[in-house]
Image (cartoon, rainbow, N blue to C red; front, side, top):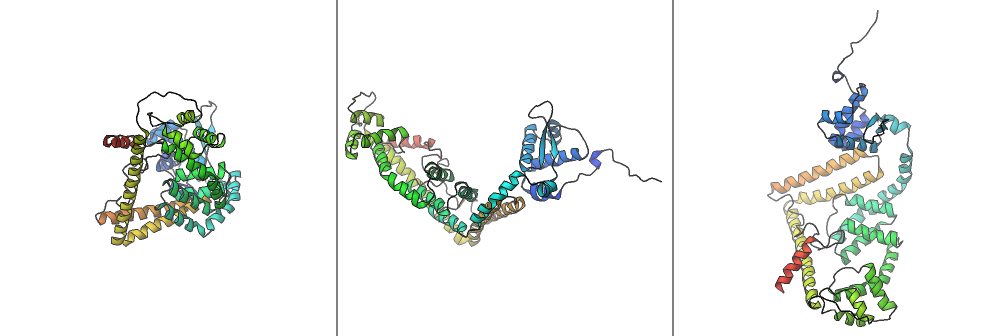
Length: 420
């Protein structure tokens, strides 16, 4: 006597085994389309069905490019391997599904060991009770709540640059006081210039550096301002100005006197002043627009930016206070959202907590949804508490994060010209 079980000839009638590790750790945080690619191809693999990326894309109603992106995503997670075919075509490859249990418990990789070796440093920084104090001090310096991935970005700076929380706080304070710009990209640029370019690691070292350079930077700005330029000096301009003080021994008043002689040219510049100071007289063509008029135009524009930014931020603060008074739960939600962001930062930096991170994201989304519901339920627009800048590109500063003039600057300047 023999025993046998009928085998389904149609693989759609068979079962596909999916490891719970995938369902619990990887699927919750992965893009839905990428999960579809993984599961559908896994069905092919378990049933020995030959296919390719183009066929897979057709079956799922996706673009081939999206299927390729999915494999790159899963390869980055370490749960599949790309196997190049003999054709050598970079987009034509096979897929090997990795055993997640073996990957996680039996074959620790070099990368995993490297991550574990750095975990002590991160854990030490994250377990410090000053972390929440750091975020609060930054919010006090900026006058706003931390946004989006900013908490995670800040922790990344702590780990990348190996500086204390007080250095990060000082960077935000410095940017707020000197430039009224506390966008993470700008603060990062300032922090990097201190730590990497100048090799400064403590607040005391940074303050000493700033004290030494502040006088000369004041001189740069004063000279450029006399020429109607409200920006930082370029490296070439700094070199020329330094030569006036260091090589020629000129005083600031003597230099400013030479700057006054630019009143008869359209676009006054450092090279013209250098020609005046070094006795190399040159004739500059162009209209005879006065420097004072140009200076007045730019001053009015910059003052208008400051006034608009202040009014818009004060209005948002008033709206926020109004909502907090009428709906106290929203103030509680805002505080909880900050706590969630902080915890999410810890989880993501520690690594290996994809499930926990997914839970924290879901918690944040739930809080945001509750906040939006409460606002609309009380007849407030969902963005009622946000700052409404006149220009969303530069946040009413006239300058983009790249340091370039915003497109709205020219329009404002033209508007001032008509009034003069």
